[in-house]
Length: 490
Image 1 (cartoon, helix red, strand yellow):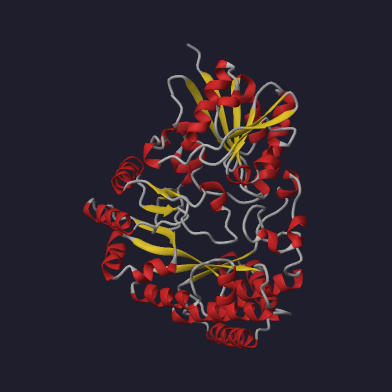
Image 2 (image 1 turned 180 degrees about the horizontal axis):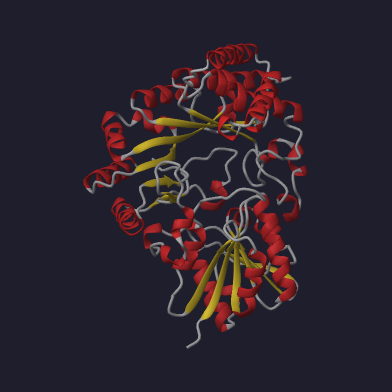
């Protein structure tokens, strides 16, 4: 029997660089299918130089082509691929899924290059969809999709959120996992998802649109078993948990930590969580986290203004960020604090409060990391309706393809202010509170570094980040130094 080919595509996330993250969403879809019936091909465009030609070649005998896309450049690249294949092979169904398609399914399906959209959790939906396409059954019986029929768009009923424990384990043999090893935490670090969804309802977050505020976690025993296999077969020694909220279930977290310790995994791992959860979980969990290899935790802080945090329904106060910073310092666990500039109604005073909280975090422990993004308004989230300018962001799928976290057509924050804030986070903050103070044997460079540190602290105190002459001088010095011939070459 000739097996039907299923082609799954992960478009590029940018024109430059290499994104080393295992395409877990595509692997989950592929793992749901019977390998005895289907020939499944996953193409990660971030790894392939001539991916358009490769996709075109593989499509010659494919039953369908699936594409996943996050908001931003991945949409743009995905549309480029879809257009090329639709023009070359118009009879091959092109299916889109992933975050953007789930958040804006109606807008996505209107593209002339897309035939079907899968909403939300896709494993069982995709499995049924492939079966219907193969047997040429009516797609109306497949829950959780939108499709075109006789120039009309038909949307089926939403599929209920499945218990992730009922889904099949990821089949990593479908890809070359070694392509995705990074040294982010250890020599063989990869990403892993142990739960989906989040029970909270932050006003800016699109997670509730996809998972409807439901949290579903793999049982601790299954997490331990899967990571044990990854360690044994591939030598994995670092895990980045990509869960939206890893620490929801305290009992589960404890069991996972104990499993890591009992099995002597000797891995380092990172996860996302809420500061209030962790500082209230008590010393027993802290001890388990350390012993199990937890080295870093991402905290969604968002703002340093309690008024703004209340407005966006965060459910936490800014003092919690400082509590967690102290907690992390005492327990040698680094925090990565994520903030959002330009939230609806954010004033200059509230922005100053955020800057102050960020500085205080670095004062507590300079090893703590700071991430700062500009607010991305998604239709359907509670905050979207608060500003009429948000409707100008993007009205078509093509326009969303030109959007990213640092390039939005809204008037909440000016380009000048964006530049000022970027100077603060990316230059002055790092120079004022360096995670590692360089041990310069050159006294002149030591004096320059000390001077830069003092100037940066003064800049932060004065809240003045415009005209970054120091940044230009450092950049010029680095460029000049890199072009100077070494002693060996003279």
